Amino acid sequence: MTLQPQNNSGETGTAILTETDDDKKTKVEVTVTGGPPGVAQPMHIHKGPCANLEPKPAYMLPAPTDGKSEGDT
Image (cartoon, rainbow, N blue to C red; front, side, top):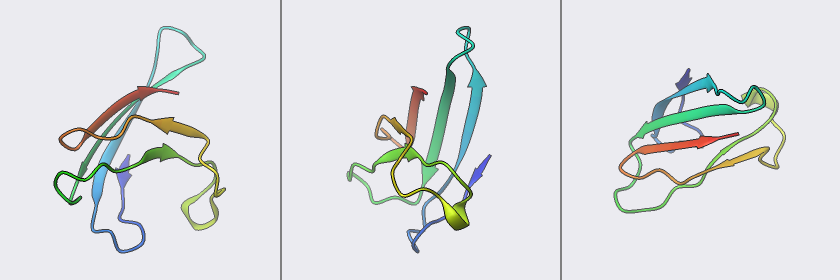
């Protein structure tokens, strides 16, 4: 899926969600560009559509390193 900038951040990216061998988990691979170099960015997933998402993150992911993050939810 394509990730669009939020709050005028200028950051864009892609996310690939893949079912794992354990049917209860999903592998999440995120690639982002446009973020400030050398600054750790939070990475998480909210429930709901972007226009009306739940404020509390549902799943936390590792902060991106060199614009990439990978984790299981």
